[in-house]
Image 1: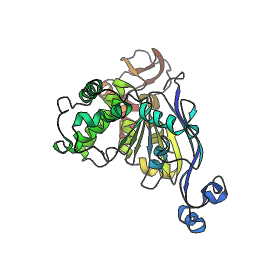
Image 2: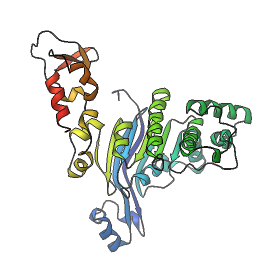
Image 3: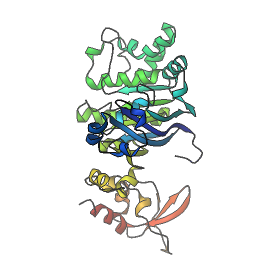
Image 4: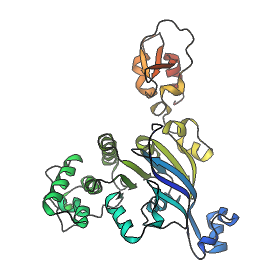
Length: 342
């Protein structure tokens, strides 16, 4: 993201502990006990432990972890479905824990929306009514809310389906309705809690592509929860790897794959084809008077994508960023990166 990007969401030392006297455990050595020991000694479960992060406007921030890592609890604290035991959750600098019920309700209706794994569509209402539901609650008149709902249905590829009912749609189409419903209120921030995990692989891939396309078109701030590393790498501008309620590593897909913070992250990324994630910037070398160049390659180009260019070219390529040369890449460097995946 650019250096001048504004922060949309901030979490500061956020905890969520379930059980008796949970607030007294926050920040103590007891809170660092393994989950089973903590529960045996205190009767409490620490779902999220001292998590801090910032998400900038227009960023896709993915939180990835196994079941029980705390990722879904974390995202549900961002709109106060769950209240934190301790810490701050800031939306555009405002602490949502300090909002009264009316203001919180307004934030949920206008500023932030959520897409769940289970579609939660109203079976007795038409698709257009499901999509317009948030606008209806907001008090928008029928004609403009249906117009907005039909516009958003076109955006997610469901134009013409507005008068159908949920049971007439496939699972993938129903999830598109859920996505349209979240978009209809024109929120600044969109939360996704494992929205595609119940879909079959082909439909899941289509929905991932849909999110990428939507982000290119509408540029929302998105916080996406998943247990699937491939999904995280595909969607995220940055990825947070979560384990036992804490962030183990936060970085770009390239950083997480190329420089795992510990053995836990390394185990996750071991089978990832590095050439499909690493960029030319990560394999380039300094320019040292190579003479004639075969052409230019953008520093952010994925290594896999530059292979056709270098395959039959003996001369090196200039690596450029913002119109300036930042390095050099050649066939040897690209092939070496490809070989590492074998």
